[in-house]
Amino acid sequence: MRSFLTRVLSVVALLFALVGCGGGSSSTDCGLDGCTITFPRSGAASVSVLGIEARLVGVQNDVAEVSVAGQQVRIPVGATTEAGGFTVGVERVTGSEVVIRVRP
Image (cartoon, rainbow, N blue to C red; front, side, top):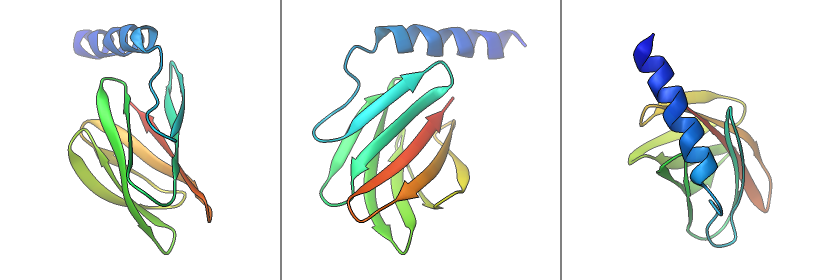
């Protein structure tokens, strides 16, 4: 229980420390329950959120390949998985953008 509380407090402190957590043409929306990141579908893009780097590697047939905290995973739209100690999900993939959700 104590380690969970420590992790939650660390995440809250990081969220308050994040002034501009976006990078390039990506955008982020962070709250106490994690961050939603919108990447452009084409081109290399990465952001720093929750003290880690999240990067879109590529998209193929509604499956996004992302790198979170140094761990690369492939996630279909609507699914979630663990990566680098975080829960990562792909909310949507369009012709112009990829939206993922990263939660502690």
